Length: 137
Image (cartoon, rainbow, N blue to C red; front, top):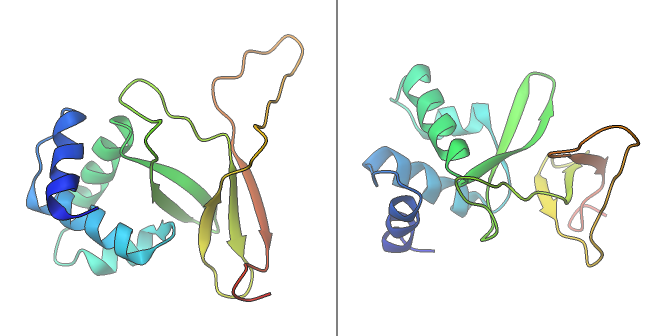
């Protein structure tokens, strides 16, 4: 997706295509997998942490990005697919973290994953897996 497409995506989700939002999405896209908060913070300098937090929260709320993985006080964020929007996040897939290279990827399954728990209403779920990625295996 180029800068114009990213700007259009933000506008479709009711967000202004600010330089910082577009810049963040470009960096996440270039990274190629979910990006850890500390990496995002380093890439987005000199933006302060409060501004960065607000950018991430607004992008999450509007279905542009999602939390893909959390481990050892590090949160990883990934760009959402086309099925997400302001009202619905659809992430019924596996978030895989490589034990060797530390990359985090969203692994889409051919079969859908359905989880039902008696007497509970599930709104969202996340499956995290660790091991060796395709490149490190």
